[in-house]
Image 1: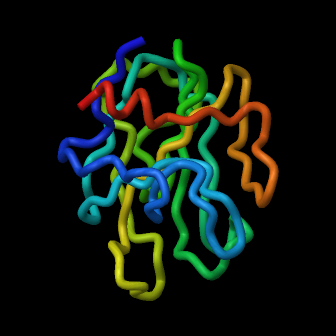
Image 2: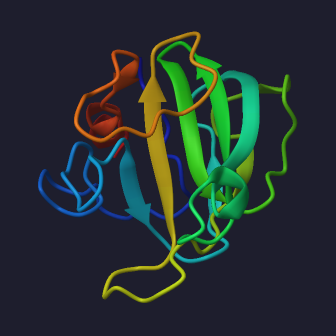
Length: 157
């Protein structure tokens, strides 16, 4: 399956061990996706055709992580599984809508409340097996439905 690039800009895909890379061990968790650092307001586009299966708070008070600013996640089920587009402003799409590859999903918004010496805005992209309806936050064990989106992103470059 060939993906389209998920942003109009093409930031680098983080390498293993870098803060935004999939599976990087952090202070309180292991990173569940890939962070593509970009400017606030960057347009996010669908990597492949699919149906929006869920839209929900991703970070901030309503998502149980008040140390981050409020952002949203849009889950789209397609041929590769369920792609989670996280750290978006209020999404411009609705649950149940069909998307073509390249259709707009939303725009990136600032997630980090405090400058930690790295970008404050990013598209956080996760990939899950088909049927997943909510992203998983985990500490030490990899959920069986979580997949690494890195190979798909590298191929899309």
